[in-house]
Image (tube, rainbow, N blue to C red; front, side, top):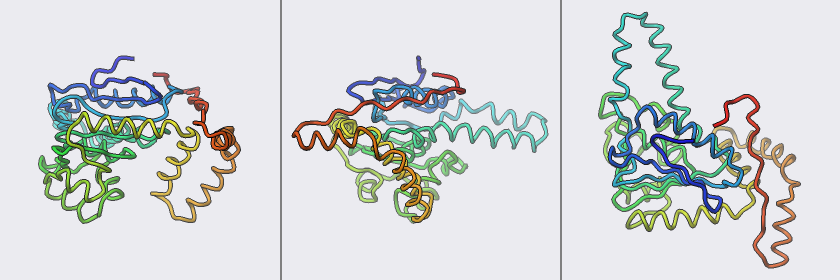
Length: 283
């Protein structure tokens, strides 16, 4: 499949998604939102992929939403159509946009993101849905929506409070100021800061390769539990863990890991089966 705003490559069991409009600061035009849905659908169907890395080309990770791409929405609001119906449609529009980043969190594979330069507006929504975040020394993060008279609406305000202190989230969301790399590291938003993009991508790919060497079934279960636990009580999460383990514990991966440990060799795990997609359109 061809993507208009992204590039996808799969090598050494790592799916690498690149934002590929550096001349436009990787702004999020209409095509971007569909590309995100399609690229993660493709990754889910790629059995050899075990981990995802998101990066971008150019000086900045992304300048966020391309407002010109949504100019038609203002015209619709003033079109004379019943206001209630326009607003109900707007609700559905927002839900559609949210799904473009929900697919990151829903993806069975861990998703790592490497940020250089500006990560603005929708970029913060995007990285908030990933599992692990890394950045360069020149990186900065900005909840830009407040600066243009709107409320961030595709995931930042829902996910960021689970990643960094609530008071800091509120300060960033209310003021629209830039969070620089050093503060992002100190607050726990990013795992590590690098001098430049090349050094960052080298290290992130090493981490991704380490994850890809583990049992894919165990990695999928770990992500499932971490996301579930975030939104449920400890008791509920423990009960779900017990049910999950009852179904997944007795896999060949467990015995292969034990044998490899005894034989002092690297384990070799089979790829997991991709979803059959009996009903949904295949990418």
